[in-house]
Image (tube, rainbow, N blue to C red; front, side, top):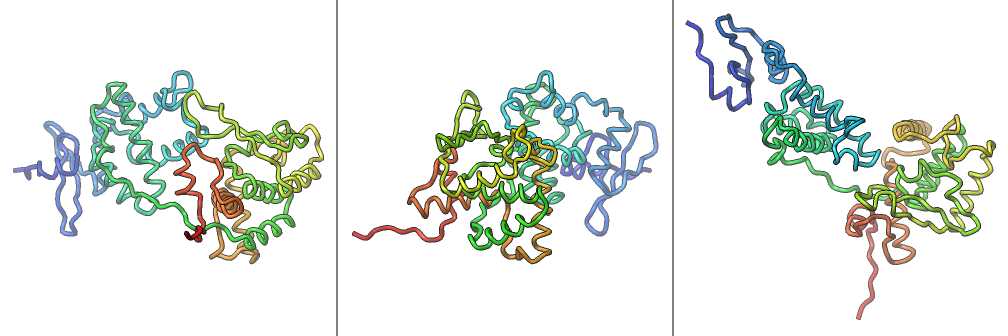
Length: 354
């Protein structure tokens, strides 16, 4: 007589119909599938792989209704979802990267079969070593569930109730002497590393995001009027590409522009921070070159491990210095509270006594 299936384990582990979870001495489970009128099929000890095998066996891998199918509908080039259309290019790239990771676990599964325990296990166990990425992947998964409900292939958002890892904003700003030493070292390297140095110095002086300065052209730089005009990123709805930041050119920024003009051998090159072939850097290309530059600087001793900083920290450097010099935070974000919480890294707050 065959061993009865453990229905309680089946429910608790979110298994598909006719699957069995068999407890092992080490506390894990081995999985089997019971086809109608056939012998049990061993599925191994990996629950996700076991679920995929059962979907294969039962012919449910027609992609309609799978998470992959919802992702492709959500991001369809001809008829994308309204939510996808509103996202910035940087966020879209971030979600594409998140999807590559999600697809390994959930891509072939029917979205209606993915439940909260599966999501919680994925976020807090399978992706425990990458908490920030796990939170981004959970956010993407939530968006896909919402669209799946719209498409009629699932009824609930299984990410609801699953706590994110959460992350605190960085609290340390690069030290002026560390930044100068690093930029001086970059200035002696290859032409493209010099461009990285110029970009880093620009952000420390102007506070733009990468998505705002990578497409910056010389036509946006008005030396006569003493200003640079850029579109503010991360605006939604009617304000998308409507909020223009007008940055006054300080003496330090003017000197930087002089140096950038000096290396502009090709007057037809439009971009202020061009690639080797005089085009605009992609976000991934710039990120790769920055990371390689940082690693090379550390290897050469120009940057110590304890002094290492991210490129985004330079935006905080600008905000922190601006407050020290003017006594107030700059207008770099639509929500001033975000500027104060994320970018202001001053450790001393002066105030007058009565």
